[in-house]
Length: 202
Image 1 (cartoon, rainbow, N blue to C red):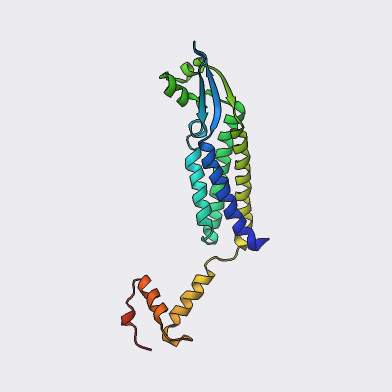
Image 2: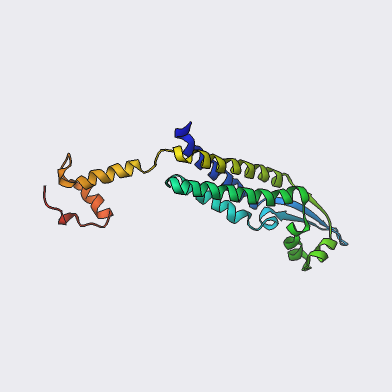
């Protein structure tokens, strides 16, 4: 289980972040205005929670970086994951269950030109939620679990840089290694910005 822990954590972060980004583009709330036309407005997740998309992208970035970082950054990323999950979970719960007028204010203002929380509240007849807020709230609960999992198991993950340390050790052996310096080694030297012609001939 432990040897797959890093893979599970990375996959969990990427999945939750991707769903969060997708959710930000979907309709979360439907607003009926108390005007003569009884207009209906759709409110996207990004409008209901302005930080939804940026923080979801941050989760994706954490998932990508978690696959290569060392022990200290694992704990840092795990802590950040818990904080982001808690914040997004709280904000999403407010929209999903309380449906505050503030979540639809920007959309109503854009459609009507009316500003001010009290004025917008007077104009709103009803606010209905789609399944997206509740589904996204479940995703943040899962993200919180991933963050706790990282903090609990991160110290037991195998180092992802072992292969690269081994390669560097072989390169550092230089001419005393088990084989002569060949064209592949010269290509590696060039990729690191070194001049292979400056190396003594074997």
